[in-house]
Image: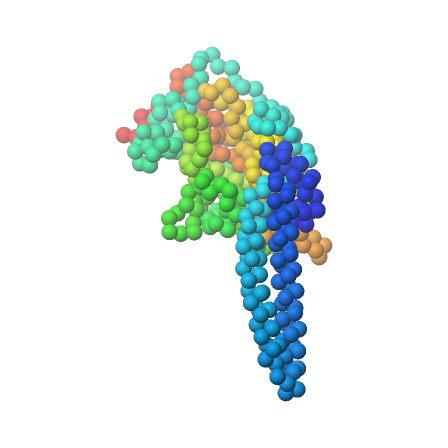
Length: 426
C-alpha cells in the first residue's frame, strides 16, 4: 500500500514511474474519486459538528423551559443527512481502498527500466558450468531411473504437477531443508521460526497476494484459511499491527514451509519434472528493517542465499529484474538462477526482494524511531527453493553410470556419498 499523502502530492511522477512496470494509472479517475471521497468526509464532519451545536442549544433551551420542537426537528433532519452521507462515504471508501490495493509498488530508482525478462540485467556469475564427457540427462529422467522420484504414483494420489520422493530422494530433500536452516541460523544470524501453513485473508492482503492474485492460491472451503503460497506470508505477518523498536532492527527470520500454488496462467510451462509444482518446499529468509537499512539489507539477504549455492558448488548467476518483470509488491528484486545442465539453461532458484514500506503499510507494521513511528521496511527471499536445489544437484552431480554424487556438505545429513539405483518403491 502506498503512502497516500506522498501518492497524492506526487501523482504525476508516481504514474510515470508505474508506467515503466506496464501499468497505466488513471490519474483522472484517482483525482475524481479522491476528491469525492474527501468532500463527502468533510461534509459529514461539518454536519456532525452542526448537530452537536444544535443539541447543546436544545439542552440550554429546555433548561430555560422553552419549547424546542422546531430545533429537535432540525436535528433529526441533520441526522438523516448524516446517515445518507455515511452510506456514500462507506461506498466511496470501499471503492477507493479497492483502487489503491490494486496499484503495485513503485520501482526503486536503481531498478533498470524494461518490459520483460529479456531486459533483466546480469550482475555476476559464480562458478563455471561443468563440461560433461557424456550427454547429461534432465532430472525427470534421472529421478525415475534412480528410483528416487515417482511422478505416476503422485498423479494417481493427487494429480498432475505433484511428485513422490523416494528413499535417498526423500532424504536429499530433507537434508537440504536442514542444511539451509543450519547455515542461515548458525552462520548468517537468522532466527528460525516454524509458522502455520494455513493463513487467513488478512495475512495475504498484508503481503500483497490478495485481492489481486486470489486465482494463484488454494482456498479451504468453508473457512477463512488458505494454503500458504510461501513462508513470506506467515512470517511477515508475525508482526502485523505491531510497532517494532527501531534499535532492535533489523530482525532476521528464516522458516521452512511447504508452499502451495495453483500456477494459474502457467499452463504448458515446465510441465515436465518438478520445476513448477503445485506443492513444493522452500526455506524463506525474511527481514524487518528501518527505511535507511533496507537496501543494504537486500544485498546481505541476497548474499546469504548465494552462500548456499556456493557451499553446494552449484554454478549460478545473479540478475536484477527490470521494472516490467518485477513482482506486484516489490521495489527491487534480484533473482538467483542456477545452471541446469539437463536443460542447458539457468533457471530461477531464489527471488530476493525489498518491498520497502509497501507491505508494512498494508499489514500495519511500524517502527519506532527516536520517539516517532513510521512504516517499517520488509524484505524476503528464498534461501533456497528446496525442490529446485534438489534438481540442480541431481543434474549437476550426475555421473556417466547414472549415479549422482552427493555434495560434500550434505553427506553428514544423508550418511551417503553417492545416490545409486535402489529400485524405488517396491
